Length: 32
Image 1 (tube, helix red, strand yellow):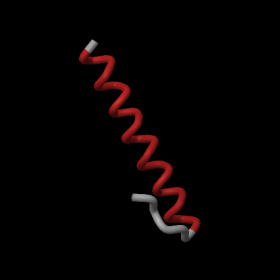
Image 2 (tube, one colour):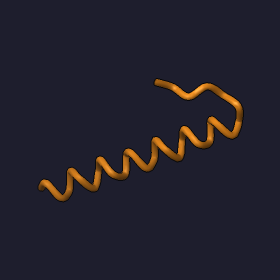
Image 3 (cartoon, rainbow, N blue to C red):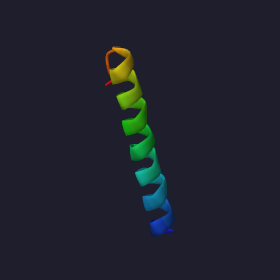
Image 4 (cartoon, rainbow, N blue to C red):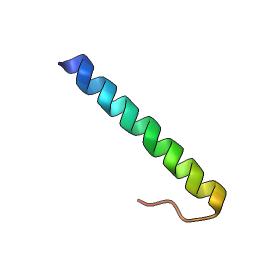
């Protein structure tokens, strides 16, 4: 159970980083 939650949190962090990088490349401000 703990491992499963950890995987979800890690995946969310990676997705957020990818999303922010895409916005940065397009010149848009990053959401807080």
